[in-house]
Amino acid sequence: EPEVTQTPSHQVTQMGQEVILRCVPISNHLYFYWYRQILGQKVEFLVSFYNNEISEKSEIFDDQFSVERPDGSNFTLKIRSTKLEDSAMYFCASSRGDLSSGANVLTFGAGSRLTVL
Amino acid sequence: TQLLEQSPQFLSIQEGENLTVYCNSSSVFSSLQWYRQEPGEGPVLLVTVVTGGEVKKLKRLTFQFGDARKDSSLHITAAQPGDTGLYLCAGAPLLAAGNKLTFGGGTRVLVKP
Image (tube, rainbow over the protein chains, first blue to last red):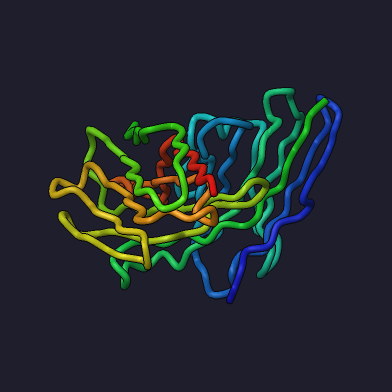
C-alpha cells in the first residue's frame, strides 16, 4: 500500500539553528500538508500546498516556516531559526484532493520528532 | 476557527465491555474522519463519514455522523486489548481552500485484559 515517508525520524537541534524536515508524498497525490503535534496536545494544521504554492496556512505558520517542493517527489518544511516551543512531532500528509469518495482523504507519514534544546 | 471537542479524554475499560467516544462541534463539517494513532506514529485513517445521519461499520467499530453534520460518535462493541490507542476525529470545514482538516483533542482508550 502506498505510504508517505518522512525523514529524519528524530532530530535534535540547538535553539536558533535551521532545520529541514523532508517528506515523500504518495506519487499520484496533488495536495501536501504539514501538521504538528506538541507532546500531549492536539494535531494542529500548519500548511497545505497545491500546484506549487501554499493554498492555506495557519497562524502557527509564521515567517520562520517555509515549504518547498524542490523536485517531483520531495516536500520539505524548513524552520529558519528554531525556538524551544518548536519541539513537536511534525507530520507530513498528502491527498488526491478529489471528492470522488465524498471526502478528501489524507494519508499521514509516521512523523519527524523535533527536539530543540 | 472551527473546533472539535472529543469526550471523554481518557477511557479505561475491561476486555469485552462496550465504549463510545464522542466528537462534537458547533460548526458544520463537509465530512468527518476518524483516525487511530499509536505512540510515535502518524494518524491512520479508520473511516470517513460524509452524509448527515450516515452510519458505517468496521468490524466491531460503528461510526455515526450526526444529522446536522456537527457531531460524530465511535462505538466499539466487545472491546479487545488490541483496540487500545488514541482515537482522533478530524473534520473538513465547509469552506477550506486548502483542504485542511481540523482535529479533535483525541480520546485515549485503554482496554485491560
